[in-house]
Image 1 (cartoon, rainbow, N blue to C red):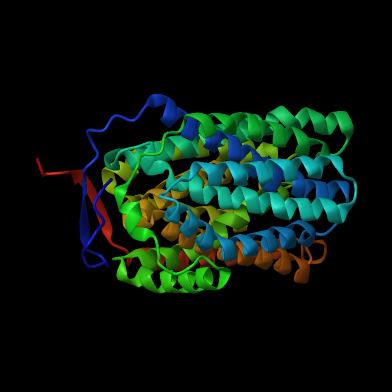
Image 2: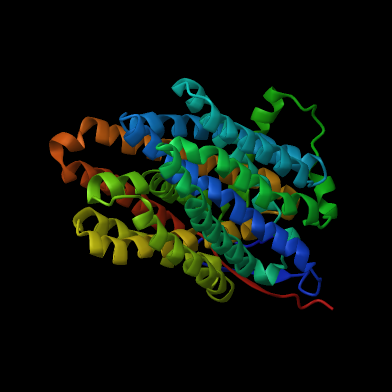
Length: 438
């Protein structure tokens, strides 16, 4: 594990020495960890981005708020419990796998329920719980990255995971698509999505080997574990991010650009169908996903070579181009050939670089705890994003105002990215290098 950075934040460069570059990571452990990204992105695209929103807006003929508000509600819960769960995993000596298993099984079981019940309110409740399981599982999954990589290739392995995740989303979408034609409803995809998630997640439960970190012993607090103490600790942790060079600015930047990205994930499919006029969301999601695979792998290399900060700056600048283009381009060919692939590249690059930079900035002994705060900032913004998108379209009804309503909604995303970019420019540039110690 690398030593924690200890230099002033801002525009300065922090040197992070690798002390684990000679360790051999079992390929089966790496492959199994990466495969979990393949598994969980099946749920992300099928349920969050595509088939559940289309089930609401097309099969049930309901307004966008019926999928946007439940998503926001689930993310609000995630924001509240993420720091607690991250801290709990640190207290258990840094063991993440049991938590990952529990969160995954919660998501899988509730997704299956969504596919077999007919009552809309039960489906929505199951969706909220399923998304809570999915989102909280990401805390423990991300915290396992140092166990399946060395400091010098964090970006590469992170990019492999994100890239294979998009392969999974594409494969998962096409695998369940025939069920829509067979049963005449997008709800028919929910149960097979649950099965696919579970099948491809199992190897990570069995074969990922967590590398022990003796410093975890330093993270165990003396006070008893209660909700009151945990919430107080969460508040203290937020304050303590200011003591870690660059961490507070990074989390604040993440709050703003994650707002936009989370909304894109939820709304892109519906926007492509309802605003641009595509027959299915896959006509846009497929090229975007293929580009995201390439972008993830490319940005993994860029992150290791140019540093995570610079890699993330590039990704955010691409997002600016994407949102400006999406506001004014309504031609289906241009949207499919230019906007969608560019969004995919930016999405893969952002997640790859941001995950790596968060691990660079976090003290190893408190990785789970700080990843919980990272998740909190991302999910709080993700509550606001779909809420803002759904409310904008509720006020400016597209049936009345046409494409102008979507231009305003996309404009809010552009503003969030610009604010996030401005804040991110104030974070330190962290350069990872081999340890000079013998």
